[in-house]
Length: 306
Image (cartoon, rainbow, N blue to C red; front, side):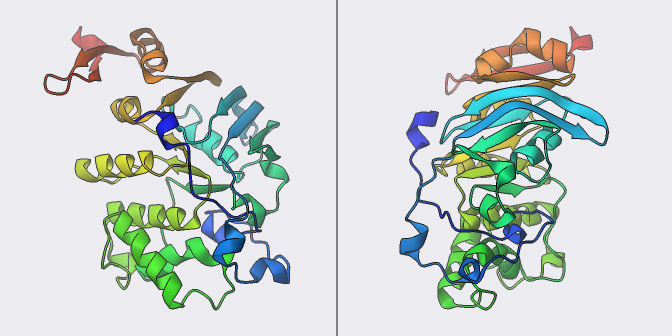
């Protein structure tokens, strides 16, 4: 599937939202209008496309610049991977693209709007983040944790309505967790908790979905199922990935981070060349054809095995 085959997406709201659904720590009570129930017609009145632009973006951790001068565009509907060695700034860049971390310099635009200039509830209409180090509250039921994706659109008392309960069940079914709504979060495995967070983000229904190591804790079956699901969402997806083979297989384009620099997004065959992988990761790589499908696959070996 190419990027152009999944550029059309469902309309998303332009009303203010709550950061509880976006994994941020900053709340915004907002006006009475922000808490009013938003019906489907109102939520469909605007249709953000999910275009993302980083302009001369420098991201820091403490006093140290981790990513310097990143400048790139992501087209609506693309699935773009971010790869790089440990400590190269994948999570820092992703959290900056989510609006959670402020850039040291530069700006992030989503559908032409300066992300860091938006109120938190407005920002959550544009991007949803599934963070690597996040876990649903252990004292919640699974359905309650997933329903947080709806809180930006509803008054505090609106989550128990039958319509919202149906949406929660559908989101859980999408991530292969049917029947889990009444199960305590503390009884879940790490992989199941990861899928609960994804269900919450899907329910948030933003034009841009940011995923930080989404395949962590998942067995191989659910890794492939999750990335297949992501490719079919018809929204812009940016995912930080450790597994280069998965990035190569599922991403339309890939951003490579190394020593503070950001290589422009490029198709996998151009982004993950043997020369780049040797320089950035210190490994040997070659492309081989799958004997059954004929598709190219990235084969990686340690350099010492040469």
